[in-house]
Length: 453
View 1 (spheres, one colour):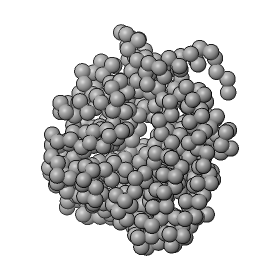
View 2: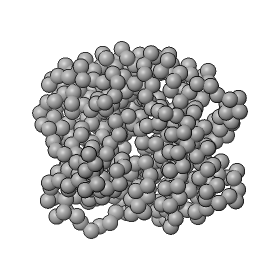
View 3: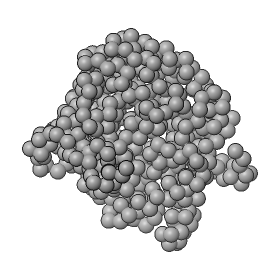
View 4: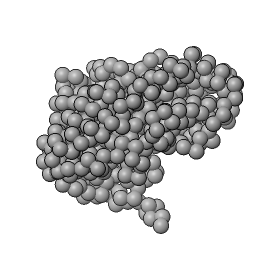
């Protein structure tokens, strides 16, 4: 791959002034050969394999960060969905297994490990149910482990039994980490149409069609996009879309360069560049500020969904032109706690849970890092999950819910997580009770347009 000197100089400027970075380098590892019904046995096998394959990951990423001058914020691991590896009907087996994953992540020096996951869009295996029941204990007793459960897909419909169960699991996760504002919930996402090569947490897992091991890159540059639009000045919306597309092209090229170099040095195949604009709590590193730079008074006001749709489309177009390896989610995240302007909009009640739900119909994922009152019922949380899953199912897209019913807190209070997870005001939830609906159970059938064969 060859880069023009102008590209290199422009990228250096983006890094220096607009907070451009590689948000994550994620090593995906297949653990099928570690399978065992005994969680302790399977866990030790997985631990040894992860140490063998990941031993140079942090060293290589650190070397490249220094040599290229490109910030790499996180290094991570993702593994095969654990419900496929342990296959036990005893939740304790999964807890024993997950401690080995956490230990491996700690010894390798990575920030997070994803894959404590199950795919239940059409029903539960015995192992799936046992893993799900173990999630509150697993996430409250580990530091780096992240979990995801896929409850719906366009081809299968929505497993409403799983949706209701996850409502209860989220409540239990919050209660298990009440002293940390429900931190376990920040490491758990409920998906529709989960992606098998996603490098971003908490939803990362190593899919069944992936290689034995692979390097996936997650790039991010909301500050770069915002600055590019600001420099444009008074252009029309078509001009703005073109600027976003060109900027996304440059961001993706940087991700491609880093991914290929890490792949070469580790001797591990390069997978995808996920071109997602992922914000941080730092001022100037905000997706919401991009929308405001387009002309909105505040993110969440009328016009926000249209602006976000244009942003995501332009990001995807630029990324796909820059690389044949664009994958993952690729678009824009709108997590409340991780975006300074989003936090401000929530504080001022410009943005609400209902408006966020509308915006998720066009963004990369879904309702992300949203704090709600601690006394919100499991059934209301299940209703929120079901609504988001329906958006994903009908629109052939990935959607997710990462929501925190903050123990002991109510609207206007705050949860504090620190780091990339940030802080968030507790937002109001519609009080109408969907309990009778979500308790019916069964499966919402797949839409007619799922029949494509």
